[in-house]
Length: 323
Picture 1 (cartoon, rainbow, N blue to C red):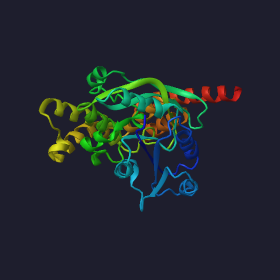
Picture 2: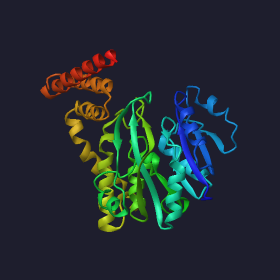
Picture 3: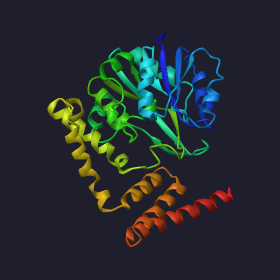
Picture 4: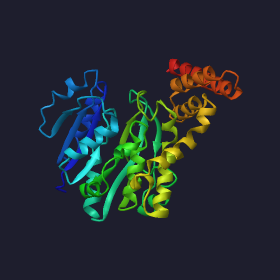
């Protein structure tokens, strides 16, 4: 249990939550780690807060311009010096036994390449659990099901440094559209043994600015289908469009997925509403439904979305006031 763990933390406008995130690392039962924090040109007090840390295991970096989550992670990968690499998002927090338990799995099994955990999701103030993520556990199950959906909570993933040296980091094609971790973990699973620990060791804060909860473009909504197409290609041919440099074919495939959004400009808002309904975010569910109506007021389905979201929001507010 003497492996050094490099923990990557991109941070953008995270001043409200980052101290909780860092404390959850500093107080880990496993103490042989380095925490690499990169401020991604925040316009709040994030940099000021992290600059006050005196623990020499915490190393601070700053981007000259806003690079986004993917490119900031790829930068931090290159700074890591540990035998094991993991993440800690700046608005989430970890169970205090998380690192110890994941390191223990790598110590027990020299063939293990990637290890995740169960994750529990909370509202923005971290007081109420909204959903749970329980991915498949065994290598066989993960390899079988990865084609259907991601089998990890991305930020809970821990890998060996040798895995990074083989697979590399996130692929730039997914920059600012999400599912870069799905694409990355799928490529790792295809080449290394994978497991998930069946314990809730990582906690996700559903802050409203998160890319996984705020839909800014239809590309976000089809990116998981792109990942699945690339997995299919590697399974069939041993390589995919990105590996062969065939960006033109990949872009054409993506355009075919985006065609329904071109035909119906309100579809993006209904999809956004679905995401926020699933995440129990009643406020964003209502806002997305209102935008759908505004985009195409003559579509009956948009009004159904609005009425359902409005009813759920009112019930939620009444229940909250009673509390």
